Image (tube, rainbow, N blue to C red; front, top):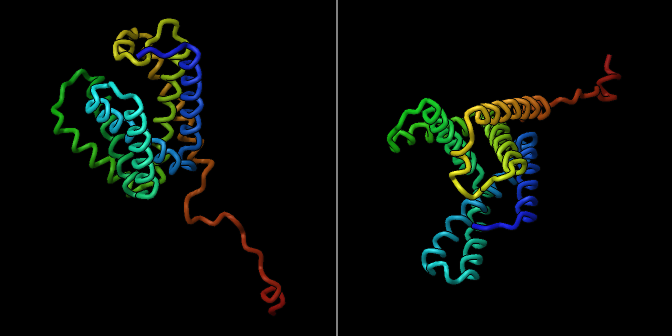
Length: 214
């Protein structure tokens, strides 16, 4: 897929800004994050299905189908909030499980991914605030770091899987360290800035009647 350098730079800059926004304000804008994620997933799936049906010959149908699928999926995740939280936790559990075993160079059966998916989804429902902050901070940090890498690299191919595989070991360590550092900063920022739900931080002033009682 060929993308003009100017358009690609705009897309990457937008990805960096969106990643930082999610990293530091993901808990506050989580419904928006769900809607965007649903739109991307739905648009990708339906557009791919339309591409298969038309053999890629009717671009207009593919675009319309992708937009329609994205809007429907985004609306579903926006209004089915608990389902969106469960899905976010499930995806996070799968990615974490995959990253651990990929780092250990251990091959696993696809059926084993059911366990981290269920565990992540259930945890996201049980401890929503903690998990939403955790998911958004590290997901946003990853998007910002990877988009920055693409933006700064002189010969990047962001739509080619071989580009990621060509990254050297030392550069991989720097990427992982940058991601973890930014994710931790984002997590601490969100956890400290946003008060817990149900906690009233205002101090009630005594009423005049109470003050006059002797």
